[in-house]
Structure formats: C-alpha cells, structure tokens
Image (tube, rainbow, N blue to C red; front, side, top):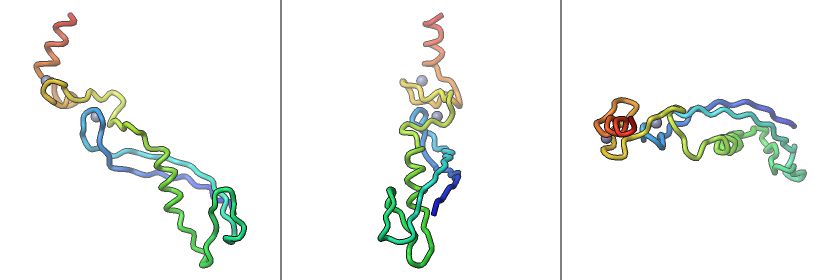
Length: 105
Ligand SMILES: [Zn+2]
Ligand SMILES: [Zn+2]
C-alpha cells in the first residue's frame, strides 16, 4: 500500500534574529510504503495495523522535522536586534543604528 501525501503545517516558533514569536509555515510531501502485516516489513518498517487504522501522525511529524529550519527567521530580511540595546530593528531604529550609518558615511 503506497501512501502519498502533501502536508502543510504551521509551527509556532521564535525568530533567531529578533527573538519575536512567529508562525513558521512548513510544507512537506511524502510517499511511504506500508506493508499489510507486520510479518512483511517494508524498508520503512511501516505496516498497516490489524485494526486497519493507520496513524500517520508519527510519519508526518518526522517529515516536518526534516523540513524545519535549524535557525528559523521570521522574514528573509529580518533586521534582528540591536547588539547594543536589544531594540527590535524591525519595529524601530535606535541611536546605535543611526551612529553606525553615520560612521559608514
Ligand atoms: Zn525576526
Ligand atoms: Zn541600539
């Protein structure tokens, strides 16, 4: 029995740059072969239980874990926090950032 599926999940997580919580979108596709009984294990070791109800959640969880970035960021252009005062630079700029800009000018 071959299962193919597409899953979308939203995982609440925290941005590694600005430390703001955000919802991480995860998309995954999978195909797994399930054997009809535990005597004929497939490569994946998955089989259809006797009651016929396949619990896909452990499989899906595993796939989504693979998809999860190790360092999630809220947006690709997240400005992060000021290293001096910890101000969230996505929301505002602080005096330190202004100074850095001046120094570079
Ligand atoms: Zn961020
Ligand atoms: Zn600052």
